[in-house]
Length: 209
Image (cartoon, rainbow, N blue to C red; front, side, top):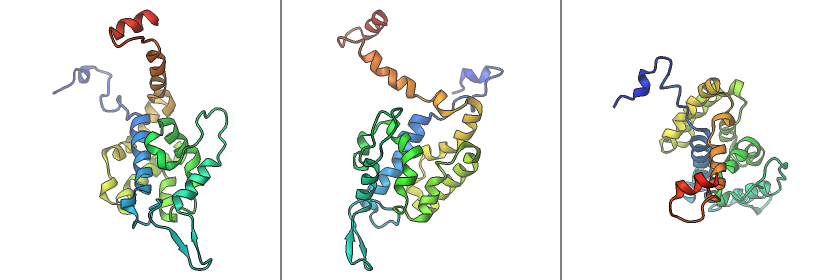
């Protein structure tokens, strides 16, 4: 039905609910691509990075390490600054990754780590998601448009479409960190520590706060 919020005279119901960066971008879109890059069912795709197929180099006459092993080795060699509290994990463990790890991979690690592993066309396509904001709107439009061309319809998810709304949301609400769910997710651990039993949870939090 019609939302009562539509009756507010200065409230734009479309632009006032931005797609939440942590869940829609990091835990959905970035994870979607990483998962597909290493999924054995995609072993015949040009962008596959998993271990099912090995690369044979006729010139060197040797079996080269699987791309996933190279990617994991590159990640393991990264020594992040103290501001980043989690060291990079193996891509094979992405089911255990936290949102902050997907953020660090996207912004800091992915471009140097994926170089010469993803074919150039796919590498350049991924770079469109990493560009600074002044170029982001055109780059994100191009990124989303080319997903179907490069990866097929199966990766054209609703959360991918929501990427198109991110530039306007940044323009309206400021930097992504200012309105993401990261602070609230982090504070959940504080709230959990206030609980001593599974009964009357709200009362426990109110008394301990």
